[in-house]
Image (tube, rainbow, N blue to C red):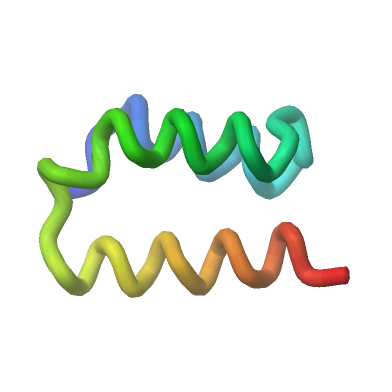
Length: 52
């Protein structure tokens, strides 16, 4: 289940409040608690937000 903290992180990523490196650092802190489906969802969000 995606927690409040993860949702807030996703919102910050979408608003580009994190550099890519900072976003990945934060992601590494909570990724071990996510399911495979949640990881796929977040991967899609990251790709959309940092696509250049």
